[in-house]
Image (tube, rainbow, N blue to C red; front, side, top):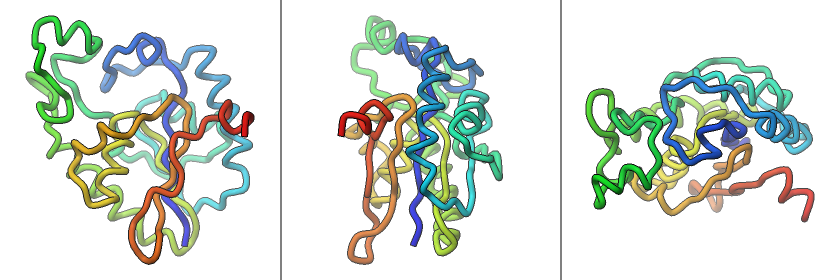
Length: 197
């Protein structure tokens, strides 16, 4: 069986500064471009039955630079919608709302998504991808929070449990199987970490 390979996009100016980025369509930084290109050797040995990308250009460009041909753009892979908190750092948000947590409170205001909303989206993507794993791997090229939710949901856990999984820009994870059950088989592998192995 193949695996669902989770690929977070390369660095943007907002990911570098810690600003929440969902619908804002940012380009990769020069570092982000280098990070994305460095993923290619880590992915080269995999046989992909499908490569699915978020509609955001930071994900689409990362896929291209990593040597992957996107077979479908999947809106369900878009980043958690932060609503009024788009473009703001956690520190800025906590200055006015000290108890806020994305994982339990969700995005705020118009367009903000709850944990249940994003879980439903990622559940659909996982359910559509799993039957393809008999043919090979399926790549999800997407975003930090959405991929963390995907991993939690693959394990049958609530979306909020994604808070326990850190994920760097331009990193790779994999969702597969262990003794017939769902498992995380790889997590947060970057080209820099692979070079140090």
